[in-house]
Image 1 (cartoon, rainbow, N blue to C red):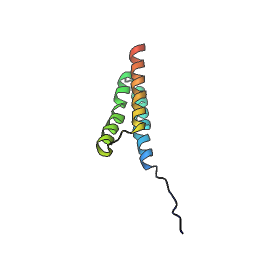
Image 2 (tube, one colour):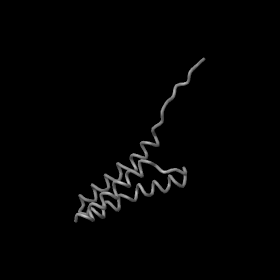
Image 3 (tube, rainbow, N blue to C red):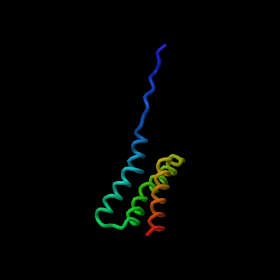
Image 4 (cartoon, helix red, strand yellow):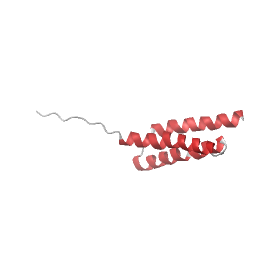
Length: 85
């Protein structure tokens, strides 16, 4: 009896981490460095996880956990900027 080896595939995870974590953080840093106010930079960076979540919900009929967590942190940062500035 020959056993098949299970090979995990992380392509979807890497793609999700890039779109929902790396890309928004990079965009925020670039925008802040160019003099864009933090609140605007956070709002712009939220476009990527929101778009990813919508596409994932439409195509796969599920919510991407990483996108949801990313949005929670972006909204939390946005609220903090609004409340304390």
